[in-house]
Amino acid sequence: MELTTDMLLVLGILVLAATMFITELVRVDVTAVVILVILGLLGLVPSGQLFNGFSSNAVISVIAVMILGAGLDRTGAMSVVAAMIVKLGGRTEQRIMTMISGSVAVISGFMQNVGAAALFIPLVSRISARTSIPQSRLLLPMGYCAILGGTLTLVGSSPLILLNDLIANANGSLPPGASSLESFNLFDVTPIGIALILMGIIYFLLFGRFLMPKVKTMTSGNKRPKTYFADVYGIRGDIFELLVTMDSPLVGMKVGDAEKLVGAPLILAIRNTEAPRLAPPSEDMIWVGTILGVMGTREQVLEFCEKQECRLQPRLRTFGHLFNPALAGITEVVIPPASQLIGSTIGEVRLRSRFGISVLAVNRRGEILTEELRNVRLESGDCLVSHSSWKDLAKLDKDRDFLVASDLPKEEARPQKVSYALMFFAIALGLVLFTDLRLSLALLVGAIGMVLSGVLSMDEAYAAVSWKTVFLLACLIPLGNAMESTATAAWMAESMINLLGDVSPLILQITLAILATLFTLMMSNVGATIILVPLAINVAITTNTDPAAMALIVVLATSNAFLLPTHQVNALTMGPGNYRVADFMRAGIGLSVLYIGVLVAMVNWLY
Image 1 (cartoon, helix red, strand yellow):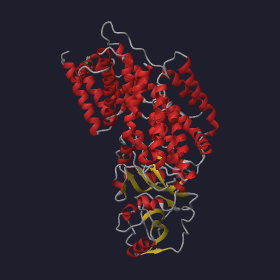
Image 2 (cartoon, rainbow, N blue to C red):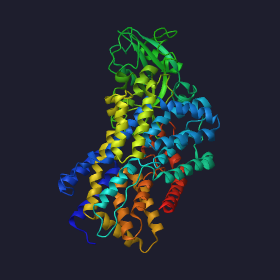
Image 3 (cartoon, rainbow, N blue to C red):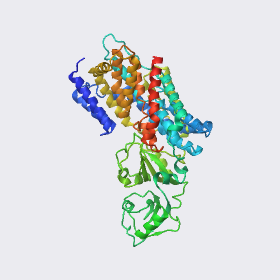
């Protein structure tokens, strides 16, 4: 097969996409939109089909799954799961780890795995506080099993949701005489998923004590040991009140400028012309008679008072009620991968004025940032050490741009609606299993049922959707179509077979699984799926093997994302677990090898 101009253009776009995904010059969803625009401008996809991805079965299904997951979260159904785990698991680390990992894997089979992991992080924190088992011993197996759980059903991950759409597209460009590929049903992949989940749990049961980082006990939020934030983040000292005198250089200065002074303690509260309040915005002015609530060692605060001519109050007369541990404290807040705040500085986000949150430090992949925090640009997985009232933190917890990794003293939002949430989830699942409705329509029945029954408002349903993921999917689907329609996938398959020579189908399967793993580590699993599934199908057709089995190996291999914190779930657990890249490498190498072995063996056994 000779290269045509259209093939060269598609190959060039593939190289451009891979480069932009790997280098992260722009966000992945922006890269996807750029690819879509280029495909349209070059005419590689007909203009009438260019935006079909936005109405595709896969994209609508992803939206519905996100709304269903948000409904289950909003009703507090997950807290019931946590209570059951503690009750049945006792205080034994291996039993607790097994129950947490198994539970998150099952739930991840029916919702996006990053959503399942986000639900379980506060629960792991709660369980850690009750059992004194370090979070770091539980979060990594939990995160890995959330990824593994995405292989349990056809709606467990975006690549699996895409699979039938890619098969249908491939059927439209099969060579003459080739049999059409059959689509997969919801539970066709379940035996493989169960095997992979069991493999992951057994792996940690046997080798977890050698693979898990050796760290001190970490419980969460207001229940962490007093030395935790001092040991991990260097945040030491107590709360003091300072009275700004007439001769103080602070008079007429903004809070933000005062915080930049050499040796300044953390300014957590203020009373100037208004009632005392926490988290004063950086623009607040300091006047004569202003009282500041600061945190630091006594020596640091005394030295600051002397330099700035402030008077140290003998006790907390103004802020005593605000700093009551029952009402306020220090906790950790994680920036999830779908946050719209990624790329913004802490100062631009205005956490103090908008949410009443004071950021004290940032944990970024094990590096602790404490200087010039207002200028720190937020990244996925950043763990913000913050001080606030529990009431303000509860409001922050409802914002999808943040994930509060603590056991908040708050009530669940709508526990009275849990029966409706479970009912409509069951209805959606039943429609998928027992009717011929399209997956997207069946799932949307459950999603709109949650809105009509008051489990979620429509605005909350919109907020539950990760539009970054939606655009990534919708804009990359035409790239897969272009690979098929221009025969680029067939040319790549032929080149790959010629390169490998006369090898067995098993070697081809392992090669494709390794390629999918590497692509997933370098770019999104959606991008890897769209690029490699057409390739796998054409390889299978050329070698007279089962195209559906080859496609399934590729799609499932995109969940083999354990080596680096590039996967969204790994990025989410990195901050709360205080993990380093080396921790993922140490635990992920063996698991990645076993994953490919079990995957290929199960697919060959079933197909």
